[in-house]
Each structure stands twice: as structure tokens, then as C-alpha cells.
Image (cartoon, rainbow, N blue to C red; front, side, top):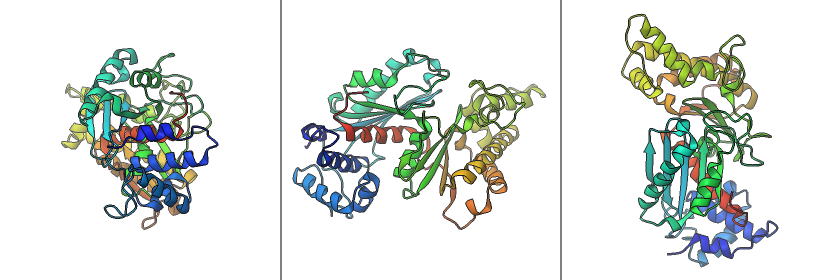
Length: 400
């Protein structure tokens, strides 16, 4: 079998080396997803002529299958290399590992109901074991791991790859999952906000992959949005773009952990929703849901209180997304996260979105679409794997 790592190490490391950069981009684009040369040119931001020339060169090395293999798609030949994506959720952890010559959904997975809400130092050994198990599931060795991407439910400064201040719970000053895991695996680890990576995964692997402006909303313990414009994640100056969970929706509302008051997260975050359901239960001495998972499961089973709580949450979310539509005019909004496992959320969201957004931005029959995530609970981990592979385009850089 071939080895992507060997070829990357042979390529010129200078950022001024156009040939080396173009080879890395095309190679990583094929590793992320088998695609036509036209799609690779679009995703790698290269001209069709450049992609055609690079594909011919890499096919001669034995790493690419050529241009007409299985439906005219360029794909990696059999290789040993493995990509890993990790989602460090507040209340769960998810890890995927994939041999880079396999399709994106042919992954080895690990998941646990414990998350970084219990503290990063405590969960680090758990994450390491999950990565090791996922890699073993690919029938490859730990030494074959080429890339690592990490999704976290917090703001990440794109200039430093550190958490943007204020560093909110459960993270603490000094926590550095990219450094901890990258040093352990001996790879360049890359980290970003989980909503950003959910957007990246949906645009890369969803059925509407050619959408120009994509918004991915993660509604779970907290609420955040990832925004992609022209294949570029919109992170903002300090990585704070898309923090819709901290939009003020009630100036006299509850104080949020960010220090603000009446943030969207204080209305439709997990703690708020569970509190609403438990308050309603208190009137008849019935026990309320203990977790967001329990609330969603009860709503799907027809529990009247939980159904109303989820649908009202959708209405609040739809109002916030209407403002986003009026500002960005996206052609696709995807809702993911644990709360999206109840279809009532989408029903409530559509109701207020169409009420408050400009009609031209969300008109029926236009390119605009509002949908639940196609990748489900694995969206953020899939996006993290893509991020890790994109990081290999700068393989000459020092590990993160």
C-alpha cells in the first residue's frame, strides 16, 4: 500500500512552493472525499487545469486512482493512513477514525455519555482510550494516524488556536486538548468550535454540498452556529462569529454564564428547557426530565409537557435565525445537536422563521432550505476529521 505521510514529507515545506502546496491541497481534498476534478478544483480553490495536472502526477505515484475510476471520481488508492475526528461535547464524547481510502461513512466509532463537563484532566485518559479503540477498529495501528481534528463547544481564537476569553465552563485556563492529544499521537492536531465543524461536515458530506452560504446550528447543552461562505468558515476576528446562543432575546431575562442577560441560551439551553419541564411537573408532583436526552425522548413519545417545551424552543430559535437570514441570506440552514432529535423543534422553528424573516430570504421554491442534520450526532466529529486533514495542507508547520 502507499503512504500519504511519506509523500507529504517529500514535498517542499516552504509556503512559497506553489507545486508542493497544490499537491497537498489536491491530495487532502481526495482524502476528505472522492470527487470529480471539478469538485476538487472548487473545494481546493485551484484552477481545473492545475487540478488535472496534479492528479496526473499523483496518479503516477500510485496514490490516486486516476480520473475515471468508479464514476469519474478522483480517489485515494489503498493506503495505510488514518484520519481521526474527536468531538469533546459537554455531556458526551464522540470519536471517529477512517482509513483515508474509504468513504466518509465507513468509519470506526466510539461514543460515551460522559463529557468534558466532568473536567478535561479527568476525561483526557478516556479520550485517549477511545481514540485507540477507534483506530483499532480500522485494522490499522496508532502509528498510521496522519491527522487529528478536535471539535469543542466553545469559542476558539483562529490566530492562536486557544480558547477565546472569557474561558467558560467546563474549560479552565491552561486546558489545551490540541496540544495534549497532538503530542500523544505525534501529529499536528487542529481545533475549532464544534458548530463551525458541523457546518463544515454538512457542506462537505450533505446532499446540498454545493450550497454557497451554509449555517449549521448546534442545539444541545448550549446553542451555537457555524457559518460557511464560499467554502470558508466564517470565524471572525477572535473566533466569536456565530455565537447566536449569546444573542440577547430578553433584556430583563436571566443572567447567562457569559455575563450577559437574557441570552438565547438562557431560554433554550438544556438547563432552561429541563427547568421549564420540571416546573410544569411540580404542579402535579410528577417527576421531570433529568437530562436533555430524557426530555427529547419524552417529547418524541408524546409527552404533552415535553412536546410543548421543545416546540416553543423551536419558535425562539426560529426568531433568532430570522435575524440571521436577514443579515447573511444563507441558502441552507441545518439544525443539529441533541435537541434536533425531536422533529417538533423544526416545526416551531419554521413557524417563526417565516414570520420574522424577509420573505425573499426564505421564500418557498427558492434555493433556501431549512433542514435537520443529515449526519446526526456524528456531524461535529466528521467535521473535525475534515479539519484535521485540511491541516495537513500545511504539513511543514510545527504541531499544534
